[in-house]
Length: 137
Image (cartoon, rainbow, N blue to C red; front, side, top):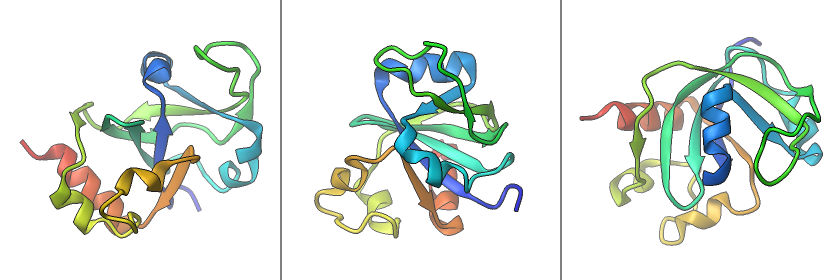
């Protein structure tokens, strides 16, 4: 169903500029099965590894193959176009936020929840918590 998924994309800082400037995110081929579940209109938040969360985006395409080298460290041939949905804001994860997120199972070593992953499917509730947190002043 269009616009029904809520996601967090885990990205490297070195590829962040490409993602923002080209409104495009890329993945390795092993993520194809997962990426096929996503539709145009789904919402995503970016998590910059070891740093912060950044902005709310809408998926502006379904997954497609493109081997044109645009990313800094790899081809990442599976791609999805993104559209900025809300003004970009950077915020760090706080203990208060981590305690409230159900997808973070190990609250003490919370970064481990992101290791080896490029995308996490969130509940609507967790997505809303992150979105509200990004909008706080």
